[in-house]
Image (cartoon, rainbow, N blue to C red; front, top):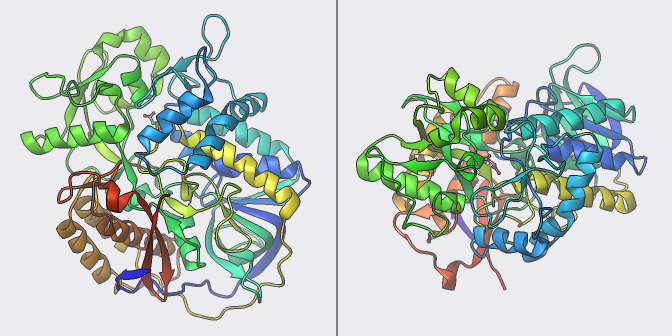
Length: 547
Ligand code: SIN
């Protein structure tokens, strides 16, 4: 084990003494596809389930998903082919067993979601309509409302959860820190609720298991497809609780995000890969199709390949974006198949029916996160993780398009099965009186620009060293107020430090991790995963070769 980043992180952060208490068998933190489908399935074992969510039920990333859900359900397709595409996209770093579980259990997971009421698009013969995205050798992506898959999935899950009286939901509840019993098993979690009545302010949920399903961390960067709430809270909570995280350096940058100008910050509109799946293609300023000759799948190459090719164009020409040409799709396809994207482009003054769309990469998805086994268990007893905040190993160095919603479904179901038979019985949570050390809310914006500048699509030892130094400076911006914004800023800062530290450690280029100073993959030294932990305020990493 090496300690290579000695900057103190936020230390052991804890909430002020809870002003109210409640209890559940299982508390699920997060209300995207992973959290809600787990809640519904855990109820089948009659468990008392509490879902807590930072703002409202549909505010997370699931609602924004455009492309769809990948599953081998089309004619001629098989889980083996899906497995092969997933492993290739993950550039030899995937956990093969996890991928096998994903692709073999995927079709049933999709069926169950449809049975729950999610309405997927159908073709003329009534079969599920399937499209293609980068890295897939088959039409394999089920979609809903054209390009509004996430919105439909979210709608169906929320309505099922609301119809189940056994699932309690607390909205406007930021999860703060884990509670432990005397044996250091998880015994609940503290929350900061902005509510009314008895559950207002800091409170505690006593529970037999805590499942973190908090989604992504895109807000760690200046431009992202992720919504405002994606501040890496689950990863930060897990780190403070002693959990191991893995593959943090593999942040995926989506190649085609609508370019809104140099000063644009925060969530940016996504232009789904499915637009290229239906025939659109990338061109440079001179109208040249630059993906030909770069990869045999051209515009439908895996996402990391396309993002890198776009960045290369931008670096070579000095242009702040490239162009996506979707004019050949025609008005009818744009209106019926991509109504959401059409609307958001038009809202920003671009008509994709007649004009080229300016696009550039932006932070999109964390392929790494809280390390789990195939039942969602972490190394901390009683703590589970599911969905984007988890690292099951299915994505390796680069997630295959539309495997994320699928991962949420498949692993939620695995966790539910595990909880049905193996729920722990922790003792009473122990009070812990150490004082919170939070950062000021202003830190968040500085972290985001620092990360985009030095730990974005293109990285080097120098840029990452600069990034880590700046993050260290920002550590002194301590907050006097333990408000929600201060917790979020602290979480973003911690997660950023772990991303930058792992990115500095990995001296090669692989998947979505692109090192200017080590431009090739190095299988001899780096067919390995980087696990990290927070130990006494420092990042400890372990390099774990893949056998
Ligand atoms: C997209 O629609 O391009 C995004 C889908 C995904 O991230 O898997």
